[in-house]
Image (cartoon, rainbow, N blue to C red; front, side):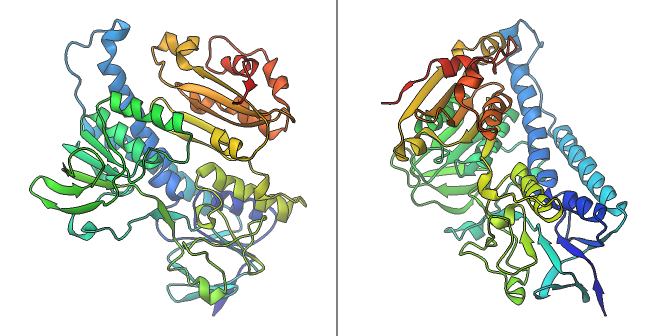
Length: 459
């Protein structure tokens, strides 16, 4: 016997619960399906636990630097990794149980835990039970990508999920992948006391960023004692008495690295391979992401994909914005599009990188006349006062329209300060409107008008 609903949401990640709230408030009968942990990646294996760990690592870093601020600690600091882990676990647990309580207490929402698979365009099965709805929303998220690399099955590897189970500090953590997730864990565990080596196949770290940003990040990490191995064209693994031997085949340095632990941080993949999408006729791309249009609807009318599984964003905030777009279009009579979204994000090393819009390299490739400005954090009073002067801020502007095209703030508070530029870009204002703002002193944000005042023709 098939149970009918007005809407089915598969996945209780960032977008799903909020969408359930809007749909039930509109009078719809909603089925929420969650296979495992409520809250999705952010709550369980992403933002919340990792940024909690980053905060503990930052506290350790500051404690070691106490003397720089006139604070005597009375000896070397000690890392209680079990307590560090417990703190992160508690933050995730509280958020996860909060999401579940919210959904189970929602009038008009039925919660079922289990693995949902399509049996037809508007029908799913969960442990033998059948359900149908004219509207189905896929919020199935993603997981760590584990590619078929030589020897990868012969050693114990860690992913961004399994590394959260560690309650001891690795002797030597080898991080495979020099991008966002890998760099955060690399610095974090270095500050916890591990030796750390980053192995990156490409010629520089975080290759999607500008070269000056990549180089500054590399200098920050190396300044804390992290080894960085670039141009690792042939990465391989084999067991070793101390853990694992990683073949790196770099253009310089030893051809192998011996590590006690190996973290694979080389991308993610969508949780669509066991969804039965073919039974519904839902099209996937070559990487398994669900194809959607500008309103996030799939090729099958009445089926939408929101969050990481649609390949249109890889962040908690873009997943939430997917919910906002779908809800606005379905319930509020609006016509909102993914293509209207201005991409912004942060890299949570210390100091953090806040980014919005185009990189300078992308702007230059566009062929338009540009204005650029760059300012080192050594000239930011708040950074000097905190003795955290690594990094810089820069902005790129369209010289004809006077619109800001993009910006990067790599420095203390950069993840917060970047929002001044995010906001001005989202309201489509010209840069002089921000240039003449009167910000609060002393802050990092107060230098944004000064940065804009120094704009010069790009050469």
